[in-house]
Image (cartoon, rainbow, N blue to C red):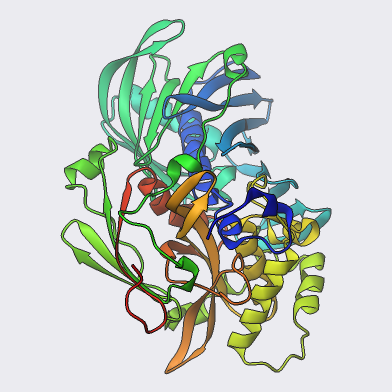
Length: 533
């Protein structure tokens, strides 16, 4: 199917155009990697005079993609740690911007008072404020003109506030410890307590614009995320940090304000991530069953090289089965297939609202009733398909310009790409009591953004519905038209309930494969016919 860009603003969009209008998996994972860099920079920073700003240039594969600045303000009884990070990426000819701001207020003795996070990933910013009380924490979320308050439990176990963690790291480095591990919290990760370890300390030199700087190099590990390398000067201030995501290297380098805020053009991160298989697929939207062979190619990832460039494990979920063949994976996809829901059916993560899947929003609630009346007696699977078709037609501006819109925002704007289709559908499913999650992976298109016969990174929804022998996970792709709820050219890389803290971890698999993935098309079947050639 050829795609004509003129259809992009039409309600009935050519499927290939709408399904590939996203780089969300990459952007979200990169934002998380950058956030980890900023966290580590804060933890290793030395004590500065009040209101001193520490600036850094954000580089992606050697090209400036943004900047980061952090400030520590001290008062007689409190310490306030603030951070601001801006990132710009290209999506073909479209420029996308991300802005994240955070603030943590603690007592001088290291007792938490409050923390605040503002994220501008789409048209409408989202703000979260956590306020510590005697027995619990009050969370206030402001988005799309609505304010929602809730009471949540305090983090379990012992942990250090940001400024207290900074003092701890500095003291233990000065004492000459060979490995330093602590538990702390950063606003960008919500109430998730993170374990941070530094080890493998060695002398090194970093070249800055002002000249070479003697540093101590160490490995920095935030549990559950890729390793980073830090370069710390004699005062204990980090001057450089590098994180390898497989096909992409993220670097934060110490800078002055003028250099950090100077003009730059963010790197293009959509077309450059397309995967070109060994042969084209005819009538991809009609594919019922497929078999693919996936491998990784060397992109300078030393960790992967040491492991023999073995393809990482992928999930066997919702019509996808995965087996290993040496360093490769054989992925079999059944467009009408499913997988047992098991313990997922009892998990609250797939039924409760979150910052992105916020079906408790008034507009989303109204939309859920418009799409499907509460008294609809249809089978669950049919309800899910009705909601899928509704989302496909409701989002009538299929555009690349939205970075990441929540369900509440999409309900108001009717604008978005595959991420907005997936998130809104997941929200409407939950609003009707149907457990849902979002899958991140790839889909095939014969033409898109000037490229032919490619796999592009994509997102869609999955829902739990009754099946043979029990409840099962089933795929629902709202970017596809009525006649095509799903096809067998989807390859699932990860799944997520889209709740706080979990989505980024699931997307790291995607980020690590970008720029390194090789796909061989072994078989493609249309219904029960012979393989499509």
